[in-house]
Length: 111
Image 1 (cartoon, rainbow, N blue to C red):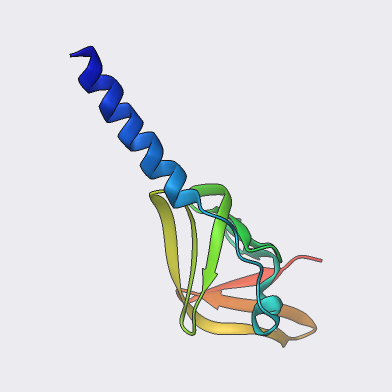
Image 2 (image 1 turned 45 degrees about the vertical axis):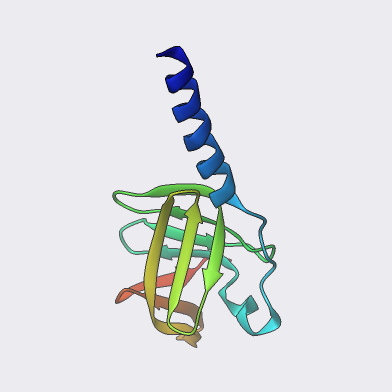
């Protein structure tokens, strides 16, 4: 019984560590995504130039995860915990502020 429990725990630990992976720095065409983006309800997404990211939503909180940006989605994750959001509008300037729209929610970049 004890060996089985150790084996199961080892498996889950290995899987979690494998999912953390090495961060990949943002390429030049994605550097506009870097920064802390905050929505009106206080949720936020932080994207670091080194490929790391943080996320605080109503049901999800990730600190120190990996960020992956594709043509139409942004994913922040750590191991098996991850959140993928549709990029509704890429970063742009509106009224003197930089905004990013993910899943239809507008996030404003903090200075």
